[in-house]
Amino acid sequence: MKPLVLFLFLYALASAQELRVAGGLTSEQVLQRDSTNKATAKLVGSANGVDGKPVEVRITAGRRVVRAWSSIGTVQGGAWAADVAGIPMGGPYKVEVRAGSAPIATFDNILVGDLWVLAGQSNMEGVGDLVDVQPVDLKIHSFDLTDTWLVAKEPLHTLVSAVDRVHWPRNTAGEQVRTEGEALARYNEKRKKGAGLALPFAAEMLKKNGVPIGLVPCAHGGTSMAQWDPSLRDRGGDSLYGGMIRRVGVVGGKVAGVLWYQGESDANPKVAPIFAQKFAELIAAIRADFGQPDLPFYYVQLGRHINTQNTVEWNQIQEAQRLAELSIPHTGMIAAIDASLDDGIHVSTQDHKRLGKQFATLVQGNLKRGPRPVSAKVEPGIYPNTSFVRITYSDVNGRLESDGRISGFSIHSPQGEALTVVFKTIVDPADPSAILLAFAGKLPEGAVLHYGFGKDPYCNLHDSAGMTAPVFGPMPIQ
Image (tube, rainbow, N blue to C red; front, top):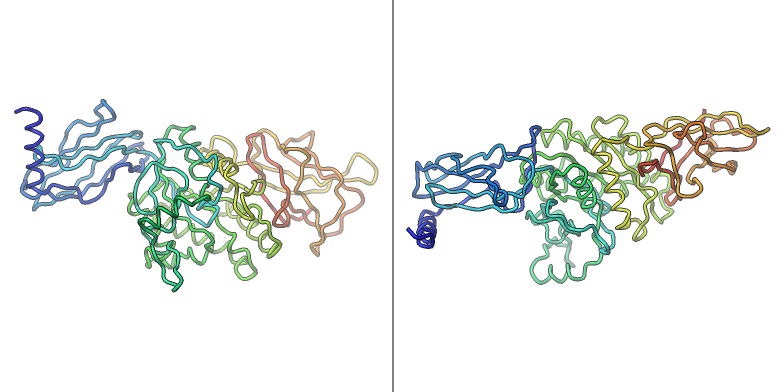
């Protein structure tokens, strides 16, 4: 039989038999690899008229056959289900499915790698200017908020068209309405903001280890820990937490980790004191609901805010975030206190790129996590009536460094008053993992140390690998 005649025959046969895949795989999808660097695709479908016939699959990568036609199940009662196991890390792959020699479906550009959930509020959603954004890479895909797999590009989050209603804006009547069609096209055409850290993170991860990345955006600007409450899981897409759980289930149920950036909305007198508890409960709930008790959870410590309200609470959130990685296993933090902004609170597109690289450094684990303050002690100075506060850091890559004169440290009285006593701040010549604050006279009993005090400090300390030193304080000066 001639090829064209054969194709038409098979097409007609397939149409008559209503062969189809109902779910489990879609083009552009990224499958989460397992500990053996392989993945399993779960397929469910129908195939009327071919009961007893085998369902077969073939996987190719360009001209290379990764898996020759082989049986993955049998049609029974007009239905079939199969696990396509052992798909190796990498791609892109073409996955073809047939039943009784009749084609059912073809899935293009399938990748096997790591899935990362993006959650939190606006700085994870991304509000950087859409100028000089991270370039597209064909091995980085996104499961966008319409539940569609596609090649990832900025902006990753488009809340107004999401499947989950919790993301929809409200109209003048207070009703939540999804934006679609021409209205959505106009919205996207006028959009000037939307760049974030996730795509730069994925690009750096791909560069470092060659593993394809799938991003699962779930963030929503302006949201608090209360709005991310795990007790709202049963509301599904009417809640942020429920929507996140649903989306992870759709992409396969397992992920490589979570990237989180949130806390700005909790910097107020009412909830800042309980932030640490709520944060720990959130991480525990995510791990339980994902069925991954050791799931890596990485987050950003709050950066700057051009605002003078709730300054104390802003620093309380930052300190709670700093301490969380010390008490919650399999977590890690990067700091954003030295990041530039594209408005009064949102990290700039260019520094989102830097934060993404820092996240990748943290996740890879090839380097130390970056400077972490350990202690502050008074030591004698080399001149009469002078002393040093010696600040010791752990986890420093290379040495402590700064862009220009080291800035960001302040000494405070027990009552919280900033003391104007420090006249020199340097890296200890005898220990590049320590800072010396030179001051004259004596400090009052109970004096404490801060780094990054306030909401808009100028801080510029980092290590040789570019990992930013976090905000801390109050730290007792011994």
